[in-house]
Image 1 (cartoon, helix red, strand yellow):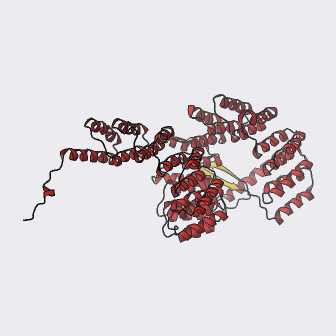
Image 2 (cartoon, helix red, strand yellow):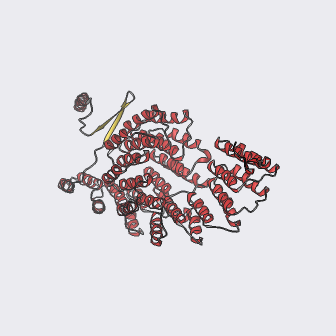
Length: 603
């Protein structure tokens, strides 16, 4: 019979056993998703005089942060104060900071940080990451500059924060400073710089980072490899992106989707679709990448077919899916399909973001239903932001309702929504389409003084268009001379269009020459200049322009038109020879032409 040691005979303390059971019950409740019940049990513990250890309290704070539950997070904080931890030690204070930031209360997080008697590098990193992830990059900068000690995490957080907030050049500079320090690195050290590569679309920088990732042996990291594929695709090196994709030892949905999106955005929709079909697994992002590719390629019917197939296969569309599909409806002016997608949003109780709602407003407007656009806009109520206001003003502009557009702009300012640079572009467009020249000039003059928006090239282009359409070319010339910067292609194209309307050959020729100099491969200037010469009967000059286009291999994109027959959209191009009913269509056209000639002879 085995001997029993004295340790085996020692009874377990009942209070300790009870405490362990209570702590375990908290873990069990959290694992079952019952955060409310877990937090409610804290009151029972306090009544029994049981104090939880720091690890358990940190776990509860982490759960509150993960659930974005500020209410229960504050309950845990209150429990700390009631149980003698009014000034918790550094470890728990760090957890409190993280919890408050995750729940969106940066002020409470800052209060906890400020009251800490002792801070370590983890404390500084917690407050830095909180501000950076919240998009409060100026606060993050100040924290970073004040840090007495920085580790790899600190540098990574700041580089990623800058890149994600759009300060890509600054992110690149900071990354270079970090690498020169030689304090080490990890896989996250390359995440921020790759985000900057994708946004800046700089091929040289992308290749340098690719080399660094390759040298340190992190190419097996799926996120880094996919980011490199994305960077090459965004830089226009889609073949290199595909080669890198083929070399990846493992591929997930993200890497497949990145390449599909790359080909779709480069316009090679056939390869994008073939890759999509080869994907072992697909998600909503994959479907949206292909749907968006077809929509932006001008193949709206194909995009809508894919959306129907996506829904039938049980894949839930996301915000970007609906935005792309509504854009597809707009591109083919299909009000019927747009209404169906709107109905799907309502039927599935989908909560659209501002971009989707604005795309919905734009779709109704461009499909001819301005009243429906206004109803959607009005339904937003207090949720109307600058994007939705801009879209509604643009809708009024497209329908020639310039006076109403100005009234809506004034209402927007009156309710406290600050106009941005896009607001002024759409309001100038409204004035131009409605001939409200003096009103548009007045708003232009108020941009900087009243609204703090400095006019850019696009605003000057709008003003040139506004003045030029009304034939006020002397004021246009004066404006061009007083511009604080050299006019770009948009400004010269606006002037060229105005010259075509009024037959101003001299100024139009000058504008075309400058536009061709700036954008030699853009067909717009050649076509408009050719039309100006043709209107003046200068056929030799028309021939010279055509010859110049051929010599420089400038090709004009063929225009397309469409018609919806029996719920199917038919797309046509000039001299179309691919439509299955082309013989019947051309026969009908011949009949119409013959009838028109007969009618003309009778008159």
